[in-house]
Image 1 (cartoon, rainbow, N blue to C red):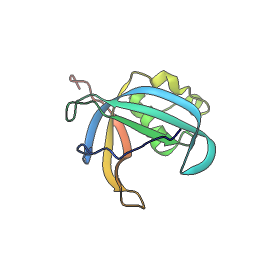
Image 2 (cartoon, rainbow, N blue to C red):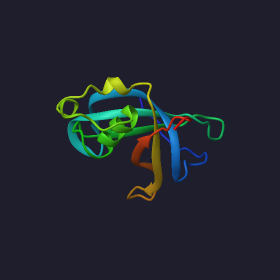
Image 3 (cartoon, rainbow, N blue to C red):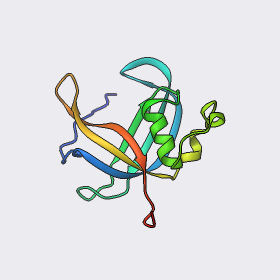
Image 4 (cartoon, rainbow, N blue to C red):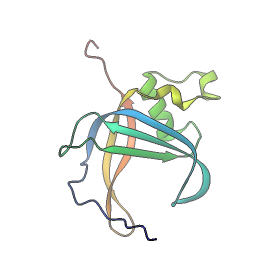
Length: 128
């Protein structure tokens, strides 16, 4: 049995800032771009529809609280991590939380475009 894959032909997600909800967290995953099998995969569902659909973004990163993963957690919590949290934080605590995600277009070595997550920052309340 063969598995058929294709490149999406609809409009690509453009550079910008998007509001998203942390939809899923999965640990101990692998990636075709790394030999590691202890990576973390976070699914982010955009709040607004684009071309009639709500795109899902994926962040795959090391399980260390640094870089984009730390930015995501702190944006979801709307505060810096405490020293105790930084020693061991359960990612499931941010499920359902809203964040702003900064996206920029990038290209694979083969020239295919994709949306790269640059960083995250908190969603501001309307009263702030």
